[in-house]
Image (cartoon, rainbow, N blue to C red; front, side):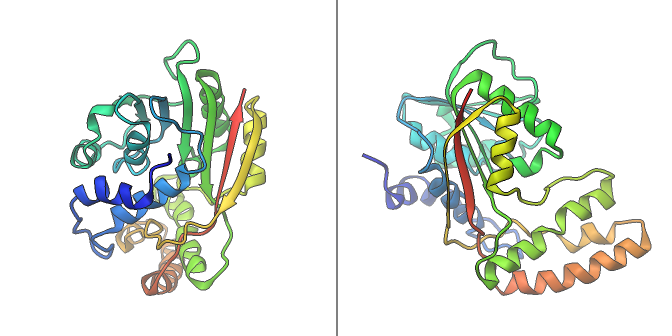
Length: 267
């Protein structure tokens, strides 16, 4: 029987302390983790599975619900190249640390010579892979080491003003990072058609796909004003500050998660 959302909240989310990181609300981590739990309802996860997660990130947003869903006999191998700052703190407080094996490595070159995993997942991580070449390489690695691959990503679609507020602020991130560091990051959200083409270019076959609405607030478009202020190009800085101020006011009034696209693939 599938685990209910209320059970997940009671047994996991309630254990994670609130965070003091204004302007984000104190429960932002719980809300984002709940969204991941809803996403994973579409993944073919069963208790006892060995699951590979690509791009677990500093806050283990997908790792925690994954580790909960695979149960005591399952394991999650969580991969990220650099973002580990709060990972142990969050997984420990959630009570699932013992089900997780963290690995600091580049997902373009996974050290597994055969199909080691029942499932590999990449949830809200395609946008952090910086370019299509890397996306294809990572997806190809996932297809080689697992029986099935599950990929989910926000879509560039706004069905109401609150979703539009999220997209307007989020869509500044790619440009801000490029102006600051000389390379893109947090790329604009792909369409489900683009995700499918990436899988096919990685020699995979999409066997199921869909979209759904999380129906939750969304806070992770936020980027501090100080980032924009550090841009050296005066003209670019002034332009992005104007756009940031306008988008931030809309975001602050309330932002909602846009629709999410997901797919299941095999090699």
